[in-house]
Amino acid sequence: MAEIENNEFFDDNVYTLTDEDGNEEDFVLLAEGEFNDNAYVALIPADQADNEEAEYVILKRAKDENGDEILVSIDDDDEFDEVSDAFNDMLFDEIDYDGEDK
Image: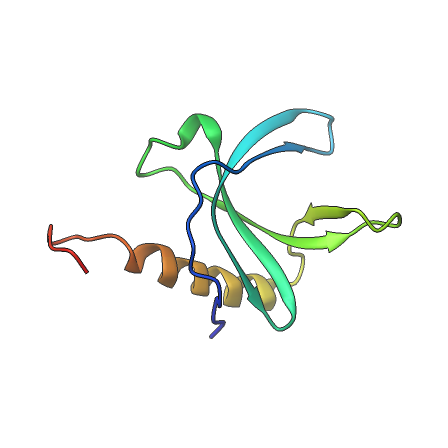
């Protein structure tokens, strides 16, 4: 199983992503981490940030041909499953289902 090394949550980081059709959407950074020398981010649509049941997306940090940082989808199913499991463990471990502090 993947292990996310950076277990920090961010409130103020907003990313504007452009899809393949040129549509832009703002996303809020939930968490980021590293696995196998790659960096990943978990993002939630900004308009869903207050919705506890909203689904998040996971993207990999990469560099484009100019050396600029970009976010790309994870094409390898095994890689995605491992990183997704690690983010799920991290994000849901932070939820206090009993009402008690961890």
